[in-house]
Length: 319
Picture (spheres, rainbow, N blue to C red):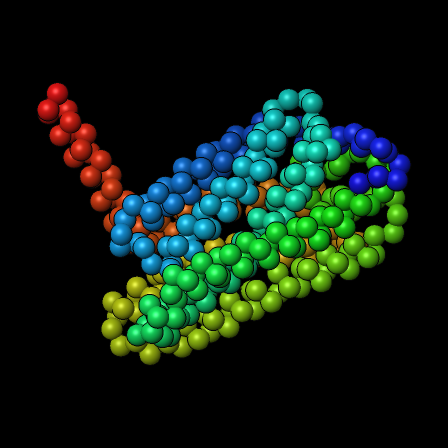
């Protein structure tokens, strides 16, 4: 970034929410609370999915991947955001900005694909229940998860690199709280048409095709569920699918608004609050949505907590 002008690029001043100083203490508490909820909720899902044998099925394998993604995604952004909201020094080093951009792009893109893979898993489970174990074999599950991660990394390598090669001509005041592509494009002192075209193409692949596949999957799922005669089985199918669909709507709704609107219509202030939602709030909501609406996870969590309590009581009695 600015390599033609600077041999050693300095850091950036993150303006963040400087225009709303009264909001910064509130936003600090919000981001801290969301980060703690993200850590606690997603670690809980990963641990419960690993410890309970009844959850060793594709659905929870992908859910554990999603939880790990959200953990990494928020952890790559939240600490720096908290530092900048807390004190007057709102800066980030050049290296920190590069790492943040590559990491957040890779993880965000991976989540786009992973949510589509999870919809495919739900389609097979509901529409082809007798062949579910054969189709969604452990080998295929690992291949799908690996493909999701690799696609995210590939997108990040291409997209972030294109963005970072733009000359800035001394522009270091980044009107955002994180290093994000739309905000970085506004700093460039050259024509960014090619970058915006790359952004648009990538956005079509990750933000249009993936949701389209999800919608098609849920179209078939809805038809299959309506044909189920058992009310209990129909309710269970709707329950497991509705959790995933809720996460999809929240995640894609904010991302699509952020990346698919024309650059001329991009409102920086509005963009910052939208980014705050999908980078901090959404990862905190995901585990809550999945645990509160998922009977299997709640039962597994109760079983593990009860086992830990009994073990503690046994040790206490022996001592």
